[in-house]
Image (cartoon, rainbow, N blue to C red; front, side, top):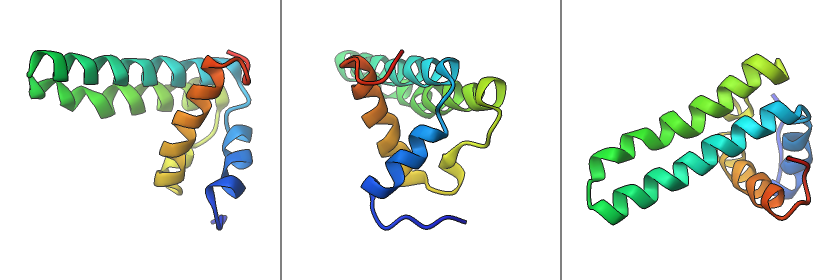
Length: 100
């Protein structure tokens, strides 16, 4: 198991695990759905919708890894860094720094 001393050290590895555009797109869809569910839950006061957050986020991401990237998600070995990586990659995709 690889050990990373910081997120800055981990992130290049994370990007390497997301080289396939379709996999990145699946992550982007899942993350967008997570944000939509959070907005829906807060705006409506219906907290029961929050169970969809991990389903949408991990479901789309893991499908992207298994169907397109053909690797095991980093979430299983590096859960916190992977979660941070998801959102950094999402922001970079929105800003056009990573190809969508």
